[in-house]
Length: 347
Length: 253
Image (cartoon, rainbow over the protein chains, first blue to last red):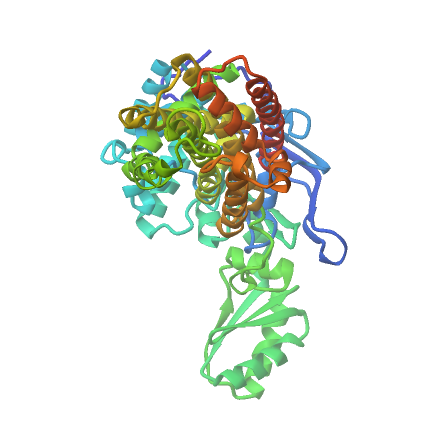
């Protein structure tokens, strides 16, 4: 039943999922923890669709419900409200079948620190039903492909953070899953290791694996995801390709830089916010950002305001929007300010 | 894949981990030998007195020490479970199709091995000092005491997963260890105890283990005490394994 393809990444199990059918699909998926006044609605009616062979990013601040959603999709938390299908299988009804088809690398990683990387890889393969020989061959293949050979025969306790993460990704794909779930995969990695991991994730996609990853790093979602959903307080607030999401805002953000004290900048922000066509204005360091429904009208009104106040202007222009602007536009706060909220780390 | 193969794979891994920790191996062997060396000499003057009517002091004392070892060998399972929760190992295994019963059994069997090997050493070490075991009885006794280890291991592991916190686990497990072992008459036979204590002892599963172990080591394989020991511990093993598997299933979905 184990039939490695030429590049070694093809799913080994006969696939139930039809071409064109989504790899992951949820319908009003919901989850709350606790009872009565302490009840926390962690996930509120999430509908997402992930196509086969894409890297899907799930972006949101800590506590937004990313991890809880992921844990439901990977069978770690039972689904009680709403529906989820992974690789064409109903997660609530056939969790065991889902487990055979997915790989998962959690935030904690799960490398077995008392064993060598190679021992862990082989055991992982065997637990998915491979023979000892098949598991050994597959381990060798991944050791070469993910460049683990330098450290794979040492006890995992001695690994650096980046080495451990590379082993954990290898563990997650030992059985050639159809969908690979990565929960905050680059948290705690230095920039070089992060870039390394991004390359590996792209390599997996090139070989046909669908990848679902959560992140609270804007750069990561922007650089890596083919499509993404932005989640805040348990709800999806936007979904699309990074380009689409940004283009929607492209003409609508005006950026003003001025040589003013923080108090004066705040006063300016308040005035900008009430100009015609301006829907919101925020302060980011020495920069005032205004969102407008009609950028030309708003730009004229703001220019007039600045002149009449004799503001020492450094620059004014239309912004290259970032995903943070998208988040700000949808939620009224900056992702960078949204900060950690309790409740997402729930087991 | 069969539960048998899964259990074998997980058991081998667990055993490997154990033997990579030389400290555990040394401590596991040192404690019972210390009891033999530093406690049993205190008993020699009691020989032939109440509770020690038959043969050597060690014939009463060694089975008690072995029950203590059987209990101790299973206790650590909860600590390891919490460590594996915190490092994500349990989560990673939960996402595989592996049977939850096999996950539990891998640890339980490892603990049974880490009981039996030092137990044999203690038995051999006690012989030159006058311990006179009945060998068929010893084999049956090790089977019985393996049930004790299995019960404690499954219970401690499941408790660790439920509590998720080393402090609370330690206070419950070590808090119960002392009354359970004292009431079982592990160090001194309960024939020395007042009536109320003997009554309480009948609520303690370890009491049945100790009584049966003393009979078995003396070669009384067919005694009612032995049958009672197997009855109580066998039933408790089934109940504990069933409960612990449920805890694994719930907590790991």
